[in-house]
Amino acid sequence: MVDANAAIAAVTAEMEKLRRTYADRLPVEIAELTALAEGLTGCESGRATLEALHQRLHKLAGSGGTFGFSLLSTQSRSLEHQAQSWLAGSLASAEVESLRDFAVNIAALTHTLSEGQSAEYAAVPAHAAMRTDAGMVLRVWMVEDDVLLGKELTHQLEPFGFEVRLFTRISDAESAAAEKSMQPDILIMDVLFAEGDENATEVLTARPVLGSLGCPLIFISSQGGLQSRGRAARLGAEGYFLKPLDVPRLVERLEYVVERRRASPQRVLIVDDDVSLAAHFRLVLCGAGMEVDVLSQPDEIIERVSAFRPELVLMDMHMPDYSGTDLAGVIRQHDNWIGLPIVYLSSETDFDKQVLALSHGADDFLTKPIPDAHLIAAVRVRVDRTRQLGDQITKDSLTGLLKHASIKEAAEVEVIRSKRSDTAVTFAMLDIDHFKTINDTHGHAVGDLVIKSIATLLRQRLRKSDLIGRYGGEEFLVVLPECDSKSARQILEDIRTRFAALQFSHNGQSFNCTLSAGLACSVESPEAGSAELLILADRALYAAKRGGRNRVELFAQEK
Image 1 (spheres, rainbow, N blue to C red):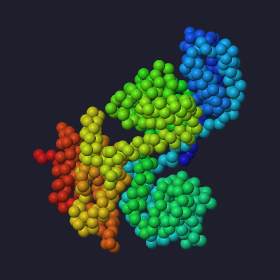
Image 2 (image 1 turned 180 degrees about the horizontal axis):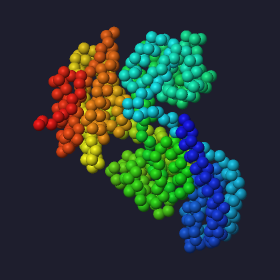
Image 3 (image 1 turned 30 degrees about the vertical axis):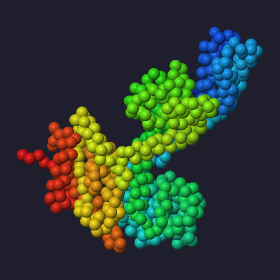
Image 4 (image 1 turned 120 degrees about the vertical axis):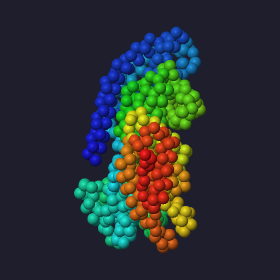
């Protein structure tokens, strides 16, 4: 938490420094604009000067409010519209008196500068980070007064990599929270408690120590009424489960929460010729945990998009030489970027022009000045939605793992990378033992549950850089970059052991499952490509099956 606060303070200081620099430059900017306006004459030869004035007033209208000068933005926008009306018609029709008033009104912008001197800026914090290193046990606090249920849940969650601390009294959990050590990664709470039938949502509100843990919150309850669910939703609960608990579904939700926290930072490209404003937006989004690149030279747009591979482009609509619609059209000409979200971030307020701009390849329109929190929320929602759509294309609907074609393609890329960097890569083929018997005995719904459980376990125990795919049916492919066969065997043995410890139940009958795995490493087979390593890993898998199942085998070259 200290590191997070320090990061927020650093970003806030940078934002304030940027504001002061902006404020210091404003008197010079307004003086230059006034000189240009005073030189305007009612003839077409002054059109170039008027276009320059329009462009610079457009910038002030967009940036003033962002740096705390709201009145400057409002008055600059009015002057921008006046310049636009002359540009749309004939400058020769402009009366001398109107041009003189125009120059006077620009000079009067100096009276708005005292407004922003006391403005305060604070970075909007990123979501609380969750410890998600490979193999790291995630801490779950469970507040449940049913001791037997609490112990059973603890027993079922631990094989998935969760370290559960059970509290039977709210006061005990509150005391632990006050200690500020070993804080939980996830909090699970029963809604109703024997001690006074307290409501957990009210407890969190009334007892700020427990409510300020800052970790994801999941409620469990024997009541599913809208009132209880509504209170949970207002507290930002990320799940609400009814008793008797469907533990695999609870594990799935925990895994979903973990995946959201461990997701890579959202990548945003800002295209804006207003360097100060773009720098502010970059600080705002970086402070919220995103990766941000800024482009102020639009002629480099394709090279920068190809190199940075953004998940969203924030683009000003009015820039010298190229408009935002021009650049959006250029991006859409490339097959790789047809689906790249493009959002205009402009001070353009004309609704008809906004709609017209959206018809030229963009997805949304945000108007400057924009509150920092609004900008962050708009970017997060758009990127999250894009990622969800991408997952539907590349990931298996049952397990959330890469589909057959996607994992094979990713495996090939990883082998090429390993050869280039002269590092090891290991392929692991996994298969659930006697899976047909599971389906025949307990039904396909239970079989699906077993498949989802091993998928969850793989995500929990492997590194973020490892690739996991459902190869087909009950078979999985894991690609372990920079991992030799010895380390890979240790990892797979751990997963095999944990999977065997999972308990499944159907119609009151409990049972366990096992898996077999085959490994093939590039170190032992240096000439093998991706296709060959797949074949070798598959051979090792069948050797594990023939050797009695519930084991991990490494492919060994025949001598």
